[in-house]
Length: 258
Image (tube, rainbow, N blue to C red):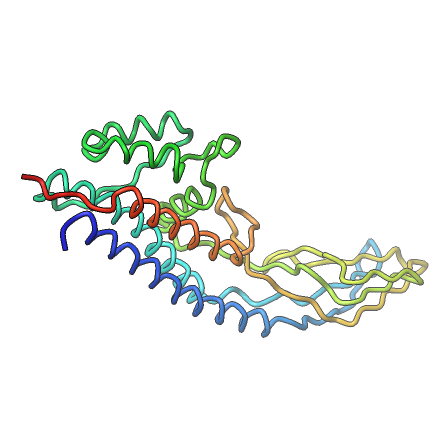
């Protein structure tokens, strides 16, 4: 098989391999969430009065971050495989993997693509990144947010283990005096304890069934801070698959360079 079809085929395999990792990741995340499905409510007192505190969820197992990193690398790598396949049509002797251009807006990403050997040899590839898969961060003007997230996560993961944390997203039934609150969304994470604070001896009586659900979210990463892993990861995989398919459709067959 000649390029770029060989690289395109390998890109499809990378996405399919990522899909398998995603299913394993989802199963591990579900297991962790189930382990933290019922967190106890305890009562204590301080200068503000009664304090009702949910037990903190466990730390996210490091294996979840490692599995997520595997998914990110496979999906991001699939995009680069497509760009490299075109580069090898232009120069069959090329050894270094070419990187699919990303930038802050359409003009910048088009200019970045034009400056590459691929962009110079294949005008359709420039149109592809600018107008079809839109690998830029100007989301008000068509930027492809899932692909940009994927690119930024991949760059982050090269230097930092992906930062994940947990928060309580929903309690069970909480009753303040005679007022019933069903499924209150009380937010916290593994370092910040959730509080329900009364008002001294005369404050309302608080009752709770003690159940709360934990969810795994991104922590320190600025671009997607506090965003749940799922369905985001599946959206990233879908966007990567669509981008690979766009390359396949745009370059169904190219003759080898003479």
